[in-house]
Amino acid sequence: MSQPETPGAVRVLFKRLSPRATLPAYQTAQAAGMDLSACLPEGERVTLAPGQIAKIPLGFAVALPAGYEAQIRPRSGLATKFGVTVPNAPGTVDADYRGEMVVALINLGREPYIVEHGARVAQMVVAPVSHAQLVETDILPDSQRGAGGFGSTGGH
Image (tube, rainbow, N blue to C red; front, side):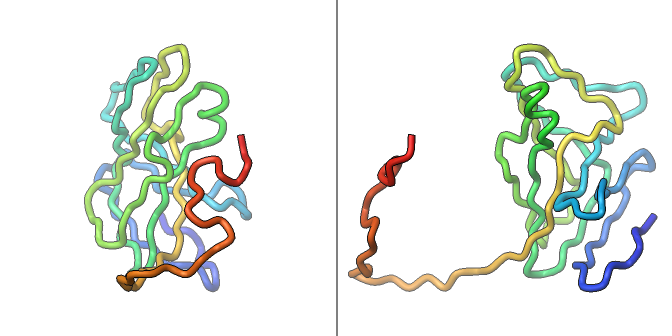
Protein backbone atom coordinates (compact mmCIF):
# COMPACT_ATOMS: atom_id res chain seq x y z
CA MET A 1 0.00 0.00 0.00
CA SER A 2 1.44 3.37 -1.01
CA GLN A 3 1.69 6.31 1.34
CA PRO A 4 -0.09 9.55 0.42
CA GLU A 5 1.88 11.77 -1.93
CA THR A 6 3.92 14.48 -0.20
CA PRO A 7 4.83 17.56 -2.26
CA GLY A 8 8.59 17.78 -2.78
CA ALA A 9 9.21 14.26 -1.45
CA VAL A 10 11.67 11.93 -3.16
CA ARG A 11 9.84 9.11 -4.93
CA VAL A 12 11.16 5.69 -3.91
CA LEU A 13 9.81 2.47 -5.40
CA PHE A 14 9.36 -0.66 -3.26
CA LYS A 15 8.68 -4.22 -4.38
CA ARG A 16 7.44 -6.82 -1.90
CA LEU A 17 9.41 -10.05 -2.20
CA SER A 18 7.35 -11.72 0.53
CA PRO A 19 3.66 -11.31 1.31
CA ARG A 20 4.71 -11.12 4.98
CA ALA A 21 6.86 -8.01 4.41
CA THR A 22 6.05 -4.74 6.12
CA LEU A 23 7.05 -1.78 3.97
CA PRO A 24 9.09 1.00 5.59
CA ALA A 25 6.98 3.62 7.34
CA TYR A 26 7.45 6.92 9.13
CA GLN A 27 6.04 6.60 12.64
CA THR A 28 5.42 10.36 13.06
CA ALA A 29 4.96 13.27 10.66
CA GLN A 30 8.37 14.77 11.51
CA ALA A 31 10.39 11.53 11.69
CA ALA A 32 13.61 11.59 9.67
CA GLY A 33 13.74 7.83 9.27
CA MET A 34 11.32 5.10 8.27
CA ASP A 35 11.20 2.05 10.51
CA LEU A 36 12.30 -1.24 8.97
CA SER A 37 10.70 -4.49 10.11
CA ALA A 38 12.07 -8.03 10.11
CA CYS A 39 10.51 -10.39 7.57
CA LEU A 40 11.03 -13.92 8.82
CA PRO A 41 9.43 -17.17 7.68
CA GLU A 42 6.36 -18.34 9.61
CA GLY A 43 7.35 -19.56 13.07
CA GLU A 44 11.01 -18.53 12.77
CA ARG A 45 12.93 -16.17 15.00
CA VAL A 46 16.56 -15.09 15.19
CA THR A 47 18.37 -15.22 18.52
CA LEU A 48 21.35 -12.89 18.71
CA ALA A 49 23.80 -14.05 21.35
CA PRO A 50 25.97 -11.34 22.95
CA GLY A 51 28.61 -10.33 20.39
CA GLN A 52 26.82 -12.06 17.50
CA ILE A 53 26.04 -10.43 14.17
CA ALA A 54 23.11 -11.58 12.02
CA LYS A 55 21.61 -10.44 8.74
CA ILE A 56 17.88 -9.82 9.14
CA PRO A 57 15.83 -9.99 5.91
CA LEU A 58 13.21 -7.31 5.28
CA GLY A 59 11.23 -9.01 2.48
CA PHE A 60 11.32 -6.18 -0.05
CA ALA A 61 13.55 -4.58 -2.67
CA VAL A 62 13.89 -0.88 -3.38
CA ALA A 63 14.66 1.40 -6.34
CA LEU A 64 16.09 4.71 -5.20
CA PRO A 65 16.37 7.54 -7.70
CA ALA A 66 19.81 8.37 -9.10
CA GLY A 67 21.62 10.78 -6.79
CA TYR A 68 20.17 9.28 -3.58
CA GLU A 69 21.13 6.63 -1.06
CA ALA A 70 19.30 4.91 1.78
CA GLN A 71 21.15 5.12 5.08
CA ILE A 72 20.40 2.23 7.45
CA ARG A 73 20.66 3.36 11.06
CA PRO A 74 20.07 1.82 14.48
CA ARG A 75 16.85 2.34 16.39
CA SER A 76 17.72 4.25 19.54
CA GLY A 77 15.42 2.18 21.76
CA LEU A 78 17.03 -1.12 20.74
CA ALA A 79 20.50 0.32 21.24
CA THR A 80 19.89 1.87 24.65
CA LYS A 81 17.63 -0.82 26.14
CA PHE A 82 19.22 -3.97 24.75
CA GLY A 83 22.57 -3.03 23.16
CA VAL A 84 21.32 -4.11 19.72
CA THR A 85 22.59 -1.90 16.93
CA VAL A 86 23.73 -1.78 13.29
CA PRO A 87 27.46 -2.66 13.18
CA ASN A 88 28.19 -0.70 10.00
CA ALA A 89 26.06 2.31 10.95
CA PRO A 90 25.12 4.00 8.88
CA GLY A 91 24.90 1.28 6.27
CA THR A 92 24.52 2.54 2.72
CA VAL A 93 22.14 1.20 0.09
CA ASP A 94 23.18 2.52 -3.33
CA ALA A 95 20.66 3.73 -5.88
CA ASP A 96 21.51 0.89 -8.27
CA TYR A 97 20.97 -1.97 -5.77
CA ARG A 98 17.89 -4.08 -6.51
CA GLY A 99 18.32 -7.10 -4.24
CA GLU A 100 16.43 -7.86 -1.05
CA MET A 101 16.98 -5.30 1.67
CA VAL A 102 18.73 -6.82 4.68
CA VAL A 103 19.80 -5.24 7.98
CA ALA A 104 22.94 -6.37 9.80
CA LEU A 105 22.37 -6.36 13.56
CA ILE A 106 24.88 -6.90 16.37
CA ASN A 107 24.09 -7.61 19.98
CA LEU A 108 26.44 -5.56 22.15
CA GLY A 109 24.33 -6.31 25.22
CA ARG A 110 24.88 -8.90 27.93
CA GLU A 111 21.81 -11.04 27.23
CA PRO A 112 20.60 -12.84 24.10
CA TYR A 113 18.16 -10.79 22.05
CA ILE A 114 15.35 -12.40 20.06
CA VAL A 115 14.21 -10.91 16.75
CA GLU A 116 10.72 -11.99 15.73
CA HIS A 117 8.83 -11.45 12.50
CA GLY A 118 7.52 -7.89 12.23
CA ALA A 119 9.90 -6.47 14.85
CA ARG A 120 11.14 -2.99 13.99
CA VAL A 121 14.91 -3.54 13.78
CA ALA A 122 16.39 -0.41 12.20
CA GLN A 123 15.49 2.80 10.42
CA MET A 124 16.12 4.08 6.92
CA VAL A 125 16.87 7.67 5.94
CA VAL A 126 16.80 8.59 2.24
CA ALA A 127 19.49 11.20 1.55
CA PRO A 128 21.08 12.95 -1.43
CA VAL A 129 24.54 11.86 -2.55
CA SER A 130 27.19 14.04 -4.12
CA HIS A 131 30.09 12.70 -6.12
CA ALA A 132 33.47 14.34 -5.65
CA GLN A 133 35.77 15.32 -8.46
CA LEU A 134 39.23 14.13 -7.41
CA VAL A 135 42.18 16.26 -8.46
CA GLU A 136 45.69 14.99 -7.77
CA THR A 137 48.18 17.63 -6.67
CA ASP A 138 51.68 17.85 -5.20
CA ILE A 139 50.75 20.52 -2.62
CA LEU A 140 47.67 20.92 -0.45
CA PRO A 141 46.58 24.30 0.90
CA ASP A 142 47.35 24.96 4.58
CA SER A 143 44.61 24.78 7.20
CA GLN A 144 44.30 25.70 10.86
CA ARG A 145 44.26 22.04 11.89
CA GLY A 146 47.01 20.87 9.56
CA ALA A 147 47.93 17.19 9.85
CA GLY A 148 46.55 16.78 13.39
CA GLY A 149 44.69 13.48 13.59
CA PHE A 150 42.72 11.60 16.23
CA GLY A 151 42.15 13.74 19.32
CA SER A 152 44.15 16.68 17.96
CA THR A 153 41.35 19.16 18.58
CA GLY A 154 41.44 18.58 22.36
CA GLY A 155 38.50 16.20 22.78
CA HIS A 156 38.55 13.17 25.08
